[in-house]
Length: 183
Image (cartoon, rainbow, N blue to C red; front, top):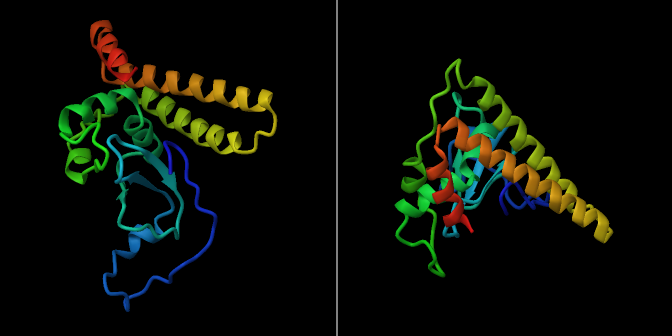
């Protein structure tokens, strides 16, 4: 799993049911869409998956009835979230670092209002485009195709980061600090 990517091949390994030793809430599996965050990393790596995918305990599952999952995905995979997460996570840079649920829950999501609804919608749309671009990149056969998708993904990452900075109302100095930290 990578940012905006899920490599599940469709194989089924278990059947979910009450008979399991540690049954989970059925909504986790039946939700039409959910965000998963990789636990074994020193930064947030998130993607969206569909229904009936059962995850191991090395992924955090995020479900929301109130926040658009694609919008949240764009925020979670942004440079701003990386920057903020570095401030929260004492394990950053360590070989066996783990993304802790408590740290992810501390990341502030912007409140959506009439004033920033357009940005919210733009971020959700950009995340959808990124999911598509990442999936299509795996079909590239030639160097030209790989280069095309690489450029497309980089373009979308930049657009997402700029929209995230805008929705959080960051100034140029704050953006510069985040960009320096990200490189």
